[in-house]
Length: 376
Image 1 (cartoon, one colour):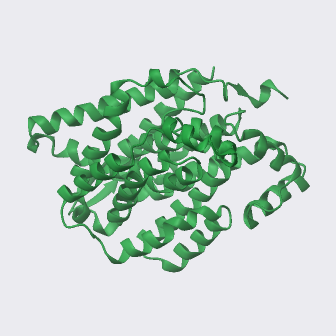
Image 2 (tube, helix red, strand yellow):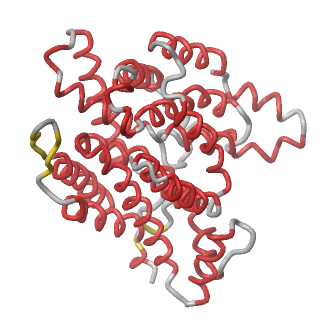
Image 3 (cartoon, helix red, strand yellow):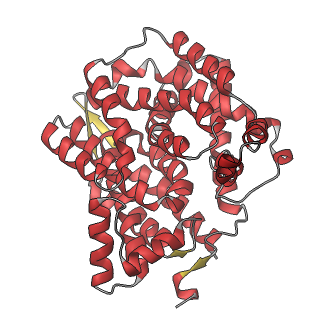
């Protein structure tokens, strides 16, 4: 049953993205056909219910299950306050998951609203970039939701609300603070790297330097008993990028798996660079460079014997949904002006997105195949 709901959820991202993006240009300004609330209502409802009511949806699910039933102490002030109120009010545990899912989709849409002209691409990409990790890392993505909201106000040049919402995010999950210095720097220095060729060279260089076989590291660290506690992290972290925490054999990784690790980022970075100036009023440079920083640090994160660095990298690399969405939208508008090679790359990216959708929809997982009504 869940794969049917996933299909409905994915279709709702495209439908609502289409409604958000539908506009006509009058005197150089976009006049949108549908109000924001009407355009997003369907996807907010379906996403909140589908993800909020999915039982056992991640490896950390039952930890949060206990938090919502019994409260928490020592995680982070605002999250503790929320879980303790939830427990004190004797609310059903799934209310906490529903509220967390609602925050992620709604506050994510508040940020997407600034780029609604490209929402047909951005909204489905938002789903693809967040669905796997948010199913497991509940508190982190509640914090991320408020980071989205803070960036919404940064674009609006409301610095006070930007700071306030980022503070809320920090008091939910301290790790989001890694974003703040980069956001502040990029808000001042719009384009720190002079050309896109340098961007691509740096990306390839960092991938070459830090792409290390985790099995080799694991075998070395296992000689020291203190590192045995990291075994589970070592064997699972590098698979979470494309799965739901279910271990697979290394032999199942195809050539296509490795090609897409490089082609998609190169396409996004190369064609996104010229858009830095075009969308500078929307702070596009911040999302572009945060994604770029995530790409540079991801190989290193996957080479270390702990998932902690990888989780921090997620704060950066997730902004792919905005960068790639804007690139694809601009590409379709100016499709005729691009070379045949560029068009082939474009079609490859579209096929890659279709493949990811198909995989997320129909791939069997032992996690999250039940709903709360199956166990209450």
